[in-house]
Image (spheres, rainbow, N blue to C red):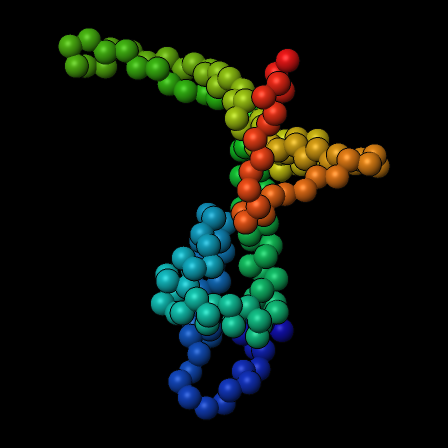
Length: 163
C-alpha cells in the first residue's frame, strides 16, 4: 500500500496537494537538512497543513523521521570529525604572473577544534560535561536566614564592630 493510497477523511472541498507530492524531492530536501517550515514553503502549503499531513498519513510521517534521522547523523559525524581533527585531500595551485604553472595533490590536516569537542561532549554526556555546575548545599544546623521587609528600618552595626 502506497502512502498516497491512504483514504482522505474529507471527501468535499478543494483536493489536497498531498497527492501531488514528489517524495523523491521531499527526501532530497529533508536529507539536506531543511526544516518542516522550509518544506511547507517550498511545497506552497501552510506549515499547519504540513503538520496535518504528517498526522493524517503515518507512513509519510515515518518516512520524514527516517530522512531527518539520516541528516542528523551526518551532522553528528561531521561535528565528531571536527572535534577530533581530520585529514582531507586537496589540490594546491602554483601561479606566476596570473597563470597557473603547476598543481600538486596534498593532504591537508584540520586540527581538532576544542569548541566542537565541548559541544559534542555536552550533548553526548550532559551529566559529565554540561556547561553549568549545580551545587546543592544541605544544612541541618540551627542557622536561620531571614529577609528584611522593606518597611523595617535597616539597623546600623555597633560603633566597635571592627575592634
